[in-house]
Length: 136
Image (cartoon, rainbow, N blue to C red):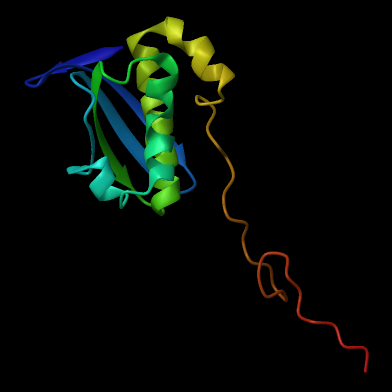
């Protein structure tokens, strides 16, 4: 499904990771990536790991130079936000062309990563770390 606006036609996808939610739009363009109004390099501090994470679906499908990515991300930290943008781009690409779905699914880019931080338990220091045991 694609939508049209004053900016033109775009493909939309919502990505989630940890407590981050990314709303991603793919516009036909030259390959620029904008996250919350900044370039992805500025927003994620130029860390190559996050750049590679975001660009993975586009590189895998060979559509890196075909789309401009505009993402709005809220919640979580830097790593979770990068993962949410990647998930959103993957979902938007499947709306663009259903033929890309098997490649994205094979790379596990369409699966929502459900791992979140485990809650702290009563009587423990963290989720599983117990206080040091003393015999005497």
